[in-house]
Image: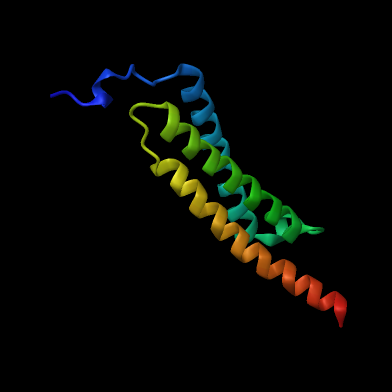
Length: 109
């Protein structure tokens, strides 16, 4: 007896595939940029932790948006690249948050 899943039409949408692909690659790009700025913080002299925090948040938003679109609307979605971007976003947020906390502590005392 065929299941109800077999009767559903293919849920692959080219616009969703394009949005997922763009979100994934922009997330990977911002994640790599965030990790580069954490590795070499002297590239940005003023406001480096705050730029890094913003890059981390943007990376996470785009990575999870790509995963959401991909899992809902793309048939053969493989989320490894967006997962890599999310990991880069978490790394960026972790280290940039520590740097921003140290800046705030130095301002307070």
